[in-house]
Structures are given as structure tokens and as C-alpha cells.
Length: 345
Ligand SMILES: [Zn+2]
Image 1 (cartoon, rainbow, N blue to C red):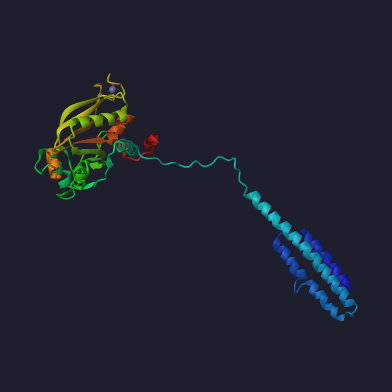
Image 2 (cartoon, rainbow, N blue to C red):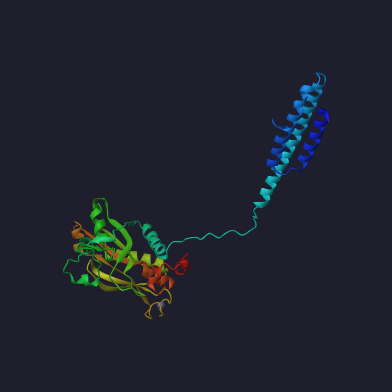
């Protein structure tokens, strides 16, 4: 074979091999083997030194034409392979947008939180401020400032978790009455506040008792506050929570920090007063305790009880939620059973 024939032979083999190449690595390899610095074409062209001056440009032109032809076909093949790779990827990664999605688990607020926020909303609408208190309290605020000195028999009404002789888990949200009065500037006007929060008693847990539960303390102190203000306020709040048809019944009671003190019942929202299991067939449901702030409590906050007066009340979130939703075991609120909690989404 002369050089011309060798180039033609190389060209045919190269273009034929090119047709069957299916991946980029083999393609690049083919170019190196055939046209690279140490490739077959280079080998063939080494024979040019034996050619005449007339023959040399002819072979040179032939080699260049082959390089150009290969170059064009190489680029076309490369594009074809890239396209095939991309198509395969698209095929394997394709999404079926009609498939149903994975449902996301949605959390919800605890029923006690919902109840608390609903009550807060009512009081915010009446211009009350909401204050936070300490769950770890001092004996001073929990008892003494609530008119319960150390030897007071009514301390027995509340079984207390003591941490030290002077520090305890608060047994009620009432210490926030004293704390808020201490901080309030009465020269700028009266005080209207509620204080929601967790409280603790040494109770044995059962369906109706828990060693921890929630209260919302309410307190209004100003000049000329009377029992009529207390009645009007609670009447409005209870009707908002339990329905406009509700009636309130007031019974005398005793709390050390209010005088006079009352227990408030509402007419049964389930039977309307005829008698049912919710109202234990009395037609009335015991709902909260309240009263006029005891003069001693006002005086201990530095207020002149001949000028200032006030009312206070305490609501129980658990009791309200249990009544409204027919929950008959208080432990459901704390056991974290999602089957129970999900009912109140
Ligand atoms: Zn009833």
C-alpha cells in the first residue's frame, strides 16, 4: 500500500468504527488511537519523508481532509451520545405528577391552650391585660399576701408542694393579684388583669383530680368597684362562653382573700335547666369562685381600702373544657394520647 491507500484504509476503518460507538469514552479513545500524537495517522505520515516534493502536499491535503471529515463526524456523534444520555436520564427520573402526594401530619394546639386563648380573647376585648406568673412561688405571695398567715386554718384547704419552708409550687394563680397590684401605678388609673397559668396541689390523680391543673385569675381594682361590676362582668363572660340563654346563680361562699365570697353556677347548657347527667339533675353547673377583694389584700399592696375596692375571680380551664366537650377524665389532658387530643383540632 502506498501512503494514499494507507490513509484511505485508515479513513474507512475509522468512520466505520465511529458508527458503532455508543459512549463518550470509546469515542474519545477512537480519536486518540486513530488521530492522536502517537496514533495511526501520525505513524502513516512518518512515511512522508520518503516522498518527493510534488507528492508531499497531496498526501498532506489528504490527511487534512480526513482530519476535517473525522472532526465533523466526531462532533455529531458526541452530540448524539449526549442526547441519548440525557434522554435516558429523563426517562429514569421522570415524575408522575398525577400520583397522590404524601399527607403531612399537621399539629394542633392543645385543647387547654385553645380554651385559654378563647377566654383571653374575651377579656382582651374588655380592656384587660394578661400577665404571666411564676409557678415556683414564695409562701409570702402564695399565702400571706392572700390573707393566709402561717397559722391560718384555711391553709389546710390547699395541700401544698413545698420546696423549702418559704418556697413552694403555687397552689393557685392568686399570688398574681398581689404581684400585679405591687407593680401597678394606680395614680394612672385602675387595674384590670387576668393571669392564666398552671398550679399544683398534692392531690392523688384520678378522673376528677390532678396534681397539676390550670387556672385563670381575674382581678379588677379601682375606685368605686362594686359587686354589681363583678356580676355584670361574669354574666357577660359566661354568656359568651356558654351561650346567651345562660343564667347565673350566686351562692355565698368562703375564700380567705375575698369578702364577701361567692360560688357562681350557670344554668345547664345541655338540658337548659330541666336536669341531665352534666348538671347532675340539678339544672345548675358550678363554674367558678369569686368575690370582692378582701381589704387586707388591698392594704398589703399599699392601697387605701377606704378608697379602692375590687373584685377577683378564678376560672378552671380543665373544668370548662370538660363541661363543654363532655370530657369525663381530667387525666386525658396530660397523658398526651393523640387519639384524645386529635378530637379537638
Ligand atoms: Zn343539665
